[in-house]
Structures are given as C-alpha cells and as structure tokens.
Amino acid sequence: MNALPENRRSQVADADRRIRSLPSWQPVLERTPDWYGRLLTSLSLLADDEPVVYLTGSLEQDGDHVVGYVIAFTTTLLVRAKVWGTDDVKISVTSAARSGLVLLAASGSTSANEQDAAVSWPGNLTFTLTYRSEGDALSLPLDIPDDPDWATEQVALLNGLRADLVAP
Image 1 (cartoon, rainbow, N blue to C red):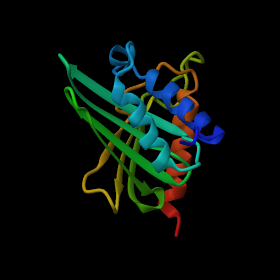
Image 2: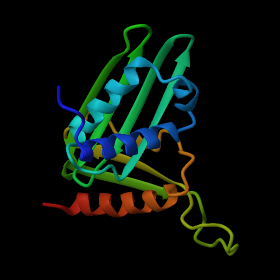
Image 3: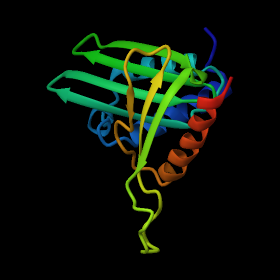
C-alpha cells in the first residue's frame, strides 16, 4: 500500500479546510464521518495534481440521512461531488473541462454607486454557469464559507470563467 504522496496530501488538506469552512457542513464534520475520507480521495483523484482555486458546497442532514454537494474548480477542471444516504453513504464525483463553459451570468451584492469606503465592491458574487457537458445550469455559491480569502477567490474565479468562455 502506497502512502498518500505529498502533493496529494497538500491538496487533500486544502480541500478539507475549505469544506470544513462551509457552515452547512460544520455540524456533520464535528465528528468526522467514515465516508468523508472517501469523498476527499475522490475529489483529489478527479482534480488530479491541480490545486483547487474555488470551492463551495452545501449539506443537509435529517437524522442520520445526509445529502451534500461540493463544487470545486481547478485552473482547468470543474469537479462536482454528491454524497447521499444514511448508513452506507454513496459518493459520486465527476469532472468536466472548464473550457466547456458556454454561458456565464454573474452579479454582485454591492452597488457600483456605493460611497461607503467600508463596503467592499463588488460584494458577494453569484454565478450561473452552463457547460456543454452538464444538463442543467449550475448556480453558485451553494454556501458561503467562513474564509477571509473568499472575496478574492470569487473575483479570481470570475476572471477565470470569463477566460474559459472565450477559450478556443
């Protein structure tokens, strides 16, 4: 059995930190469930060696039953994960090329006319993305993390998505 390579260890630790910063995931992860490590493994396998540049997700729990989602972007990939179930939680993770983006909608929560210097422009961003390989539009974020880098990551993702849209 091979140990987790260092580059993957770093990637998994980063994904773990990002998922744990999502308020909807925090109650379930107070006591890390058995399936969570398999989710991290699957995310790492499909993200390959690329670092995650943006991650959002949501999780709902009803008793022992969970339904959760993680959406991660690397520089070239969109990785989508779903977990669901009670005792034997199922995990499905897929990836698609970011270059398959065909439609992008984005909006900010702050007015361009805002004069208060304490208010950060453009505020929280929301995205609606349509990919050739995906059947339905993807609306983001699913949950806003407790992360001081979130605003910067949102703007960086927007810049990357605009580049994806015009990529050959």
